[in-house]
Picture 1 (tube, rainbow, N blue to C red):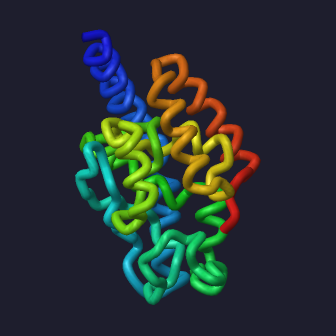
Picture 2 (picture 1 turned 90 degrees about the horizontal axis):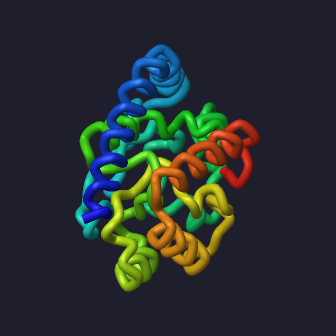
Length: 194
């Protein structure tokens, strides 16, 4: 019963923060959208199939930072990811501005501010390991414990280990700590390889 109560609080905080962030970031989001449109052909948003709670597939938007001919695989699996970046793609990724459209997923209940980052639909090893440890019960997050402890630099088993740690330690206070630490990482652009 306590878990249901904390889930209700988490959802209320997610909605509150997402509405506030959407209002504050409306103008910057419009500027980013215009920059994406003016610097490369293709759509402004990239919608990727991601794995959500209980392994349900959902579409997650990002401002497009890669060319439209980029293979649909995790960036770290590309031989030379920099070849596929748009002219402003590296900046969008390093500043995490490409993630802003995910506020819609938070408002829609497909994501939370804090949780394991949603796996791509074809990251079978990550999905399988998370499911085996019960991490699939969680809503995926805009940021998470693994994100602030290595982000792109972590091998999958280490990510899952951190996801399990989050599953076991999750609380309002822990989520606030993760959000605070994420802000610091984004400002310093630490742990982002592309």
